[in-house]
View 1 (spheres, rainbow, N blue to C red):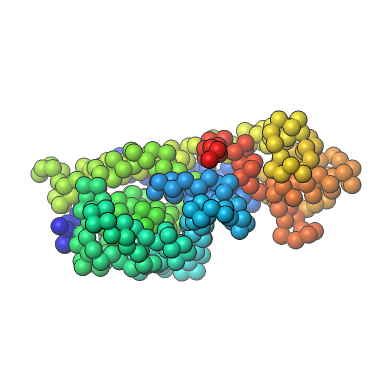
View 2 (cartoon, rainbow, N blue to C red):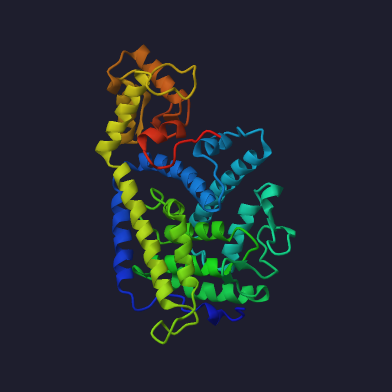
Amino acid sequence: MFSEPSHMEPLLPTGAPELEDLAREVACQSAALGEQLHPVAQQAVVELLRLINSYYSNLIEGHSTHPVDIERAMRQDYFSDPARRDLQLESLAHINCQRALEARLRDEPALDIASGDFIVWLHRIFYKQLPAELRQVKDEKSGEVLEVMPGELRRREVEVGRHVGPVSERLPAFLKRFASAYSPAGHHGITPLIVAAASHHRLMWIHPFLDGNGRVTRLYTDACFRRLPLHGYGLWNVSRGLARRRDDYMAALSWADAPRRNDYDGRGNLSNEGLVKFCRYFLDTCLDQIGFMHGLLRLDGLLDRINGYVGMRGAKLIPAPKPAYAALKPEAAYMLQEALLRGQVSRGAIIRVSGMAERTGRLVLGQLLDEGLLVSDSPKGQVRLEFPTHVAGYLFPDLYPSRVSP
């Protein structure tokens, strides 16, 4: 059993200069991604990805709630079936927790995201939102059903696969060592990206809670990238990559769980080679997701897909989000493309861009607002682009799987 914080050393990988090259590439590619769209249009993508990230984070835990159903839950439109409704609430909890995390980082610039207090706070605000059925975990050995208390460190010993977590009574000491090693104040330059990778594993290894450790770790990692800050982050997220290669993710975690093999494998209790392999996998996954979103957000391609979506809706080749909605006129594409390019546009200007007469233009604009493709903060205010899930699958192919009939 692991009883001393030194048992989780090394805390950072050594002898792997390629990790610095990978981290530098992540920073450069993410920054380039952040320059592809108008900032207002970027925010629409960020809001869509917040929902998508919830889907993929749940998927890693073996829970699948389709993005369309998560969006329904955001409108307080829940399934009547209790089990499916609970999964919708679980997705909302993740989204709300991520928003609370972002607000706290804005409000507390000096916040130490590696501190035990912050990690416990993440667990508390997530689990407080879950229905009672999802705050229970079954002990596989005894069959006992245990309640997970929000923000409470575990009080019993755990095994996760072949990994046995540190003894519960020593968890505060492990979290204190975690904080001292990974506090953002102690790292500069490109190192914080390697710290994010290494600490992702070590927090999973500590396994501080009875349940919810994976979710808390992914939220903590989200905080690491935002604390840097990493320009362009929010237009991509590592959870999608981890979920799509879940077996590889679990294998990479196991590599870094391994004990030191020999005198050439670092000087700590755990394998330095295993930690290097995990960090390499993690940073490669970041690059893969940045590259994927770079392709989706290329302006010429996105403009073409907007035009194609409107054309298919006009020809009734794809269904409207609601049967009552009419086919979209071709000029609707000009309105959507203008919002993509300019961010926010006055209602008069967007009608003029369409080339339609005032009355017809207002009808088409009203339809786009009704369908959620454009949004406005007031009845007569400027309009901006939005990406509801009924159109996201066409504009961002392969971002998430198509719905499978239950």
